[in-house]
Length: 337
Ligand SMILES: [Mn+2]
Image (cartoon, rainbow, N blue to C red; front, side, top):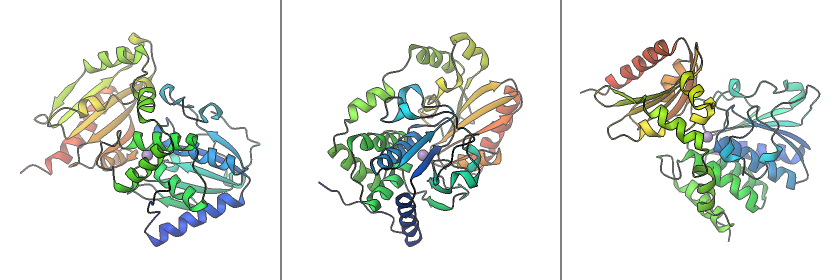
């Protein structure tokens, strides 16, 4: 049963969706890519579009330098992801999903003359519209919602594989339909996807209940670093090189650990510090809503949303923690009565 879903009530945005659909119809060979260290939204939206394009007789290459994280390798099409591109590759168009910023696309992205037009599908509010066609809608809960709008415009029927990719995109960016971005459009699409045969319980089990033992061991070490400040309004954990070496695992194994400091009562801002090298640290932020952590991350050259953001900061672990926490403190002080 078809479900009525609003596809872009904004006229300019609606035009962009039509332009995007026309470009996809015209081209024969497409490059699909996304931000580095992709999450379920980046991968799910890119793979959904790639599967649909293949069904429409197009050739597609899906490029992600880090491939797919272990818990997302079940995604239909994930086995086709390439982590490098040769200099000879040519495309009619390139589609960037969930990029946030052009600087977050992989190093092998071909120059404009070889990659064709750039389609930018995004919902990051601060995204600089780097595409030739930009479908950027911060109200979209996930980029999967934008892919759904484009496929609806094309009149493309959703297969179970496409539906599964879109479902993962929605589940990832709404925190399994728990976060404040969960809106009627995303729920209407979710219903359509379940109608098509997606099994939410099975996807949950694959995404969140198939952890490698080492990840839980890493978590137990990282949680020992939990610190709280600003009268309990800020909580942070640190994944140092020492901890990664102790457990014998990589930085991406700590993906999602920020949900633990975030879950503490009274915490407005949660942070995860990840030591990549002694002088280079990745910082993830989550906000309960008061503080715009996207603005803080942007100040450090990163980016993101009001409630979820990230950046990389140079300096020792102690220095990075001090300067970042100082910015969070300043942001919170504005709300003090
Ligand atoms: Mn996203």
